Image 1 (spheres, one colour):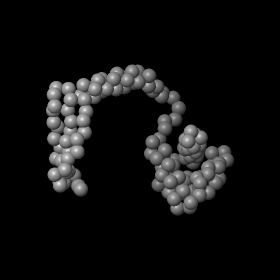
Image 2 (cartoon, rainbow, N blue to C red):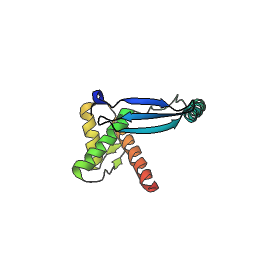
Image 3 (cartoon, one colour):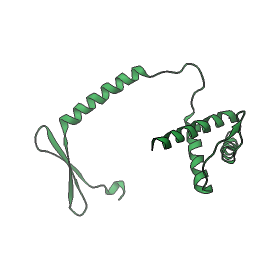
Image 4 (tube, rainbow, N blue to C red):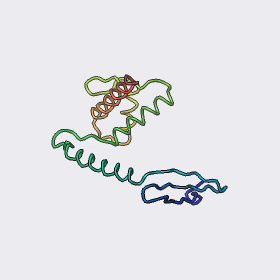
Length: 141
């Protein structure tokens, strides 16, 4: 079903506090989702308060290197490609900021084709962060 074929939605009010959403399917069957408007409103007020408080505690970096989200995503995607196509774990070994393992060399060499100016040590650092995060996730399981 594409967005042009979306089922009609009705919001039905039972009283000033309790509402439900009725989704009518093409065959005439329906499904109801009940919600309490007051409870949702209260929850949103709390979320707003938490978000405002959290903003005050955010640390803004003035020194040091900035994290690159695109590099972070690159490493994660390359790890997935490596695992899917090679069927091997993504091992990262390095020496003096230069990749040594096959997986690490693959990740760095592939990115260097796209961006030859990126320092290899920056790629290695991001790979190290990724492997550390993955080990932490696996320990929690």
